[in-house]
Image (tube, rainbow, N blue to C red):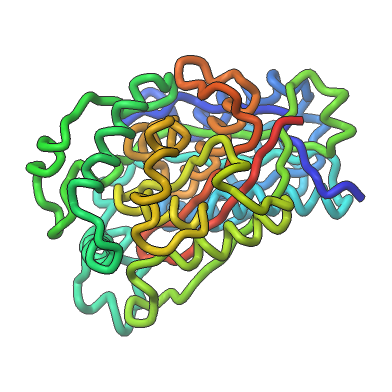
Length: 379
């Protein structure tokens, strides 16, 4: 059994702040059509579907039951992952690695513009006995974490603002991005305070969109039309979920997920062997935490040892969630799609020269301590 899995088809719709002219089904249909055309696969040849969806965000009970039609997958086996997009990708890889399937489709989407009060929805994910009664806003939880991280890592607020400026500017080169902008550090540092020290510009804004990936066993992928990108290693982890017991300065879940993915891929020195890192930046300070996890560094290491990578556009060349937009559990799979285009050399204006190996590192957002990591490589 070959442990590698190939991404044989990529379908991604441009992310938009609102999409009143399209239903989520139409968004998914558009992404699926693109992915099948890219791979040269007929939907009737797909062995199964993995859908990444969370009823909490969808506002619909058992929302996965509404997914197969627009994928052309009626009566196909459907695996539902109410989790991070990389967990959905891992489920698809395991189906192929185990021999249970030969061609699997992974789908995720966001219709965030349908939700009027995101913070109230997210607050429902807090522990109902010990945390929810305090009336905590999810952004306040992120601000507490940011404060602790800045303190322990010795990172100035200006460094967090610089993440925002760089990512929003890179997004101007990304045709899929919704929030490209040319900001200054001073504009970020004087923006509205959401919860001290978190400023509005440091919070990624929601976006609508859909992503579909066609995965196949390597020998099958080689016979298809699409240019395959190999999933060389994948990992995922959850840390302490309670607010009282979790580490606040370090993203332990991300360190664990990256270590699992690197073992799977046989990757020993990510700083030298990886050409591009796409790491979660739902909040700007999370990019620094997650880059430290991807490089195996302690708090503060991103500024000391990761600065050169960022300066060379080897970190979040897509513009990240801050520049592209945040689509809840679809976010990680969107980042896999744009990173796979980088490995192919087909990323257009945002292409980073010479990308042969890339890492995507995800986080499931407040209040979770769950994340994933995947190592992608050229075929």
